[in-house]
Image (cartoon, rainbow, N blue to C red; front, side, top):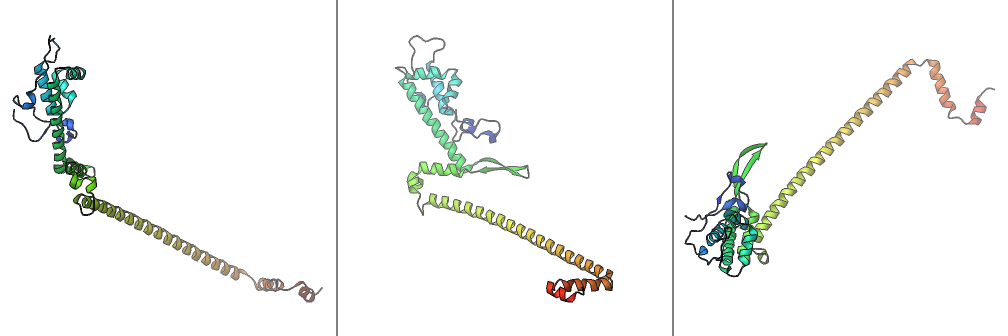
Length: 257
């Protein structure tokens, strides 16, 4: 069976292949050194024994999937039975092949992670509630994780210093994010200030209009009152006004008792 350099999604829809379980590689060939281990031989095999053939099928499936539970289900055996067999004297070859298959599965997962980090995964483009299409979105966080662990001398935590590519990339990303946030803040602040200023001007205009209407009404009432007074009423109001300014002594002098 030919081997594949890249794992193939096993789910029907590619977008659903978002976990490592969704990817499987080809099982190793029969002449693969991984399957050349010495299997455990039962002295008195029973019908439900894990035979050498089942042991090799388990190791092959484990190398393709990287998941013990999936490999156990593939050969129709329980995890408990497999772990018991692994721990028995004489099963050292089976245990070593088991570990080697897991290591191959982990390598496959690393390959998948590298592919996602660089080539991305199909991500929907949505605008106005409508699907416009798909684009392969790279995972920058995953890419940085892989660089830190694969090239720690260059991208590890101890290498994060001004001038280092990883440091400069992180700083540029943070500065861009800060600039975008500040632009949003300034835009929202200016919009709020403009709204408050419009509301203040509207209140001032309303107050000035109300004051002008009040003064106009007072002038109208005064004009109507002046037009309605007789000469006798005007003379009386004048006398009352003058009397209000006189003292009691002045009143006694000016009133004819």
